[in-house]
Image (cartoon, rainbow, N blue to C red; front, side, top):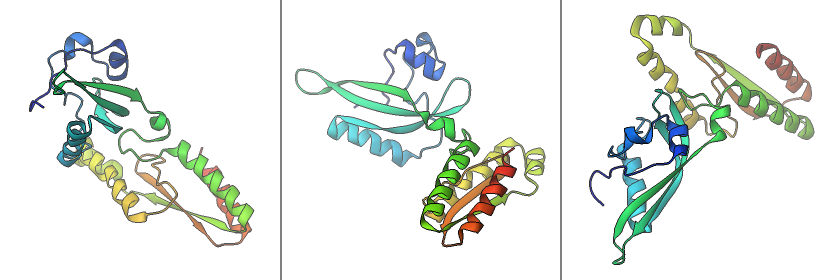
Length: 207
């Protein structure tokens, strides 16, 4: 594989997903949509699989023309010549419905996902005689961070939510329910009355 694979052609679906016209991307590097969400090791593993297995598939964060970072499902397949040497690489992007329930900036679940998951866990708690605990995290002074240091720094603060996800190891999502807000859900062995109280409180804060 050449060190800098180039885009030779694309269809209209690519334009719809990324905003780039075909004339704008022809001859551009294959890293045109690189978002910064993945490290170099991620791309190395991806291309190693393409080289050794002939294909790769998975979800990837892409930077589209509008400046938004979107999650796409990507399939890369190898087209070989008569000598079985790689000749072309064909990539197929698909929109991921994941984004309808996740925050675009941080990738964390949004309020819609929070309420869906909370209702589900409350129903399970009622069925099994358990309760649900909901921890609400509010970043004090977050607006001041944006005003004083700029939105780039504010984005870095919000992305620390990823660290909480990794540290929690919990089956419940850690959603970003608003600016500077995160919620952490965990099943607990509590009376059902406690679960009902949490349900009322959550419903009241969702408006």
